[in-house]
Amino acid sequence: MPKILVVDDNEQLSSMLKDVLESWGYTALKATEGRSCLEIARQEQPDIILLDIMLPGLSGYEVCSELKRDGRTHSIAVIMMTALEDLESRIHGYKVGADNFLVKPINYNEVKAIIQKLLKEKLYEDTLEESCNVAKAFQRFGQLLLGQPTNINAPNMVYCNKLLESLNWDWAMAQKARIAVMFPSPAELAKRTNLTVEQVISLTDGLYMGHWLQPVLRFLNAPVDNNEAFRPELERQNCLKAAELALIVNRYTSLLKEKQDRELTFSILKRESTVNHYNREVLKQLEEILRAEQILENIK
Image (cartoon, rainbow, N blue to C red):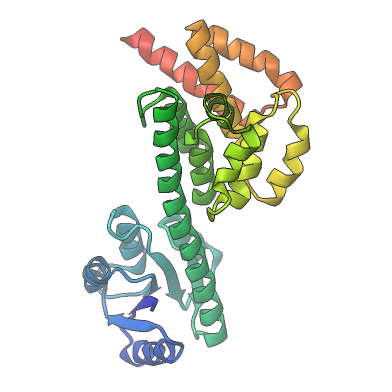
């Protein structure tokens, strides 16, 4: 049963909200000020916090900021409640990590809709987190089959994570990119078995993530200058950017292993981009990362 924490120093409002939430089938908790909210959040791990901005002691902004900084509570969705309708208050709330806003007096239909939306997003993120662990298991099995050591610090994952840190994509797209990069190459696995590439890809049939991962793997295993036919399906599955990042990272690290020269490797990649239609945003960020690495090496 989803758990929701109501934080408001107005006892009448918080009790009313608690009763309404419980009538909808949720477990409802209450806090009247910021510090008790933080303690309850750490102990009870609610799915959502309804947080008033105007609180005694710590303000709602300060509480939200602390919740999002703390590794124990950063994934809890925060809905900020305010009597202020000005844009500046909302912008400040989003800056400290608020997931949504409610303006007092509260409309319960709106509350219900926002809660349902956030719970649906949380379920998706929890499932995707498990998908990442499944992909890691596939990666380890694949590397063992190929006679390679399992290494989470392999160059392709290092550059994947560096790119995602600078690109500021949403969490779900970033996870898809990581999974696409860490997944073992179906073409390499097919060489070591009696399976075809498509049969290797079909091993993901029973996975929740299979609906988007399979078109990504087909895209990555197609000839790099002949993969345009896969892009419409990647768009439909909302994973085109993740696939494009994986394509660039895999190609760059493969070339780097061969050439042993960052500058030469990137120049080849850049020349290829005119034909292979590499994602310009990802390519630009990779260039900046490589430039920063070169500067650091020169300083040393």
